[in-house]
Amino acid sequence: MTDSRADLASSVERLAEGRVLCIGDLMLDRFVSGAVERISPEAPIPVLRVEAEDVMLGGAGNVVRNLLSLGGSCRFVSVVGEDADGDRLTAMLEGEGRVMPHLLRDPARRSTVKTRFVADGQQLLRTDSEAALPLSDELAARAAERIAGFAEGAGAVVLSDYGKGTLTPAVVGAALAAGEQAGVRVIVDPKGTDFGRYRGAAIVTPNRRELAEATRMPVGSDAEVVAAARHLIESFGFEAVLVTRSQEGMTLVSGGAHEASQHLPAVAREVFDVSGAGDTVIATFALGLAVGMPLRDAAELANAAAGIVVGKVGTATVRPAELIHALHTSEMEATDRKVAPAAAAAEILAGWRRRNARIGFTNGCFDLLHPGHVSLLRQARAACDRLVVGLNSDASVRRLKGDGRPVQSETARAMVLASLAAVDLVVVFAEDTPLRLIELLRPDVLIKGADYTIETVVGADVVQGYGGRVVLADLVPGHSTTETIARMGR
Image (cartoon, helix red, strand yellow):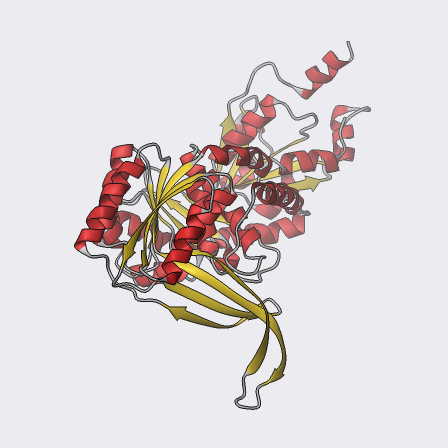
């Protein structure tokens, strides 16, 4: 896992190396936009004065658009009707670079078209023209044959299920078999309540409503979302579930020995249109996995991409430059939010405790951060769910270390600490010891370096007195700020 969003931003360029096989329901997204200036005299409805009309690939086609927009390449299998809209969709895909499409033509099917009427950035009405028919056995067999060939060389397989009939059991089975044969993950954007049809997939990406309907479990709180996702993992053998939660961001729940779960807060500043946001999520997530990113990093990237796309109108896409900028911006904002005064810190910890998080605490001057500090902080974070760092103020450091210290101001030291992924909160204290801060925050775990004994750790008796524990972290020899400053003065 990367140490920061800035590190994550540096990996965005790697997405251009990714190749994804996408299978799913293709549709045409049509946007009719204009202005509303009056109410119809014929009925109490707005009159839209049409100013523009745009068409773009929708449904699984929007997954393809997002893959290409991020620099990746794609192989695509879907079905359209023997009609003018089918011709148009075929031409649009053939006109894209870095995509190899295979579109089945079904004379019994009407190509799916969604038309949205928009004024002042708001949708007034949507109309759907479609015939959601399952593929015939003949067409499903042809799709399966092409899927098997397309999977070779892919870094991930995506099933984009819009419930229009492309992903029949035979096609899903072919995709799962092809993914297994190629040794790559199959990731599903699901539809309906029967997630058993995706058994054998690595990851599913339901939204909160889909999760609730599929599990018949409550999903109002973080803990309930995790429990429902865990139920899917246990029931169907998924490696992980990535739950999209609208304004609350995402939750990634993994199976395995540690049964990890991470809540990723939303990063959108303004929400104009959520159309196609799920397509952006699965495209970014799959492309990240296709180039070898860890699950958490790929999810972080997808979360940032979703925050961008919901700020646009229509089924929009995200470009690498936008994603890099968003990650750098959120890194700076997150760093600012991670530095808090003691009273505010107590309120933040109360919220974490409501989510059953174990709170860890360590402290120090952290002047000229070095590998010994980084090792201590990583060990401290491994001992808890949330790590708070108590930071000596400038005046406190001068009293402890003498004139000329600290080298960096408390503001600079706090910002550097807050930029580390291992640190969840930084609190500056003015006293020579953090005892008062420990008594206020009441951490579950108190961590110090192994150059201390438990008896000499400030606040150890307090923490142990209410049932907490003290952890002594291993030290990295040969590193200290004092020694570093001495070498600089030579």
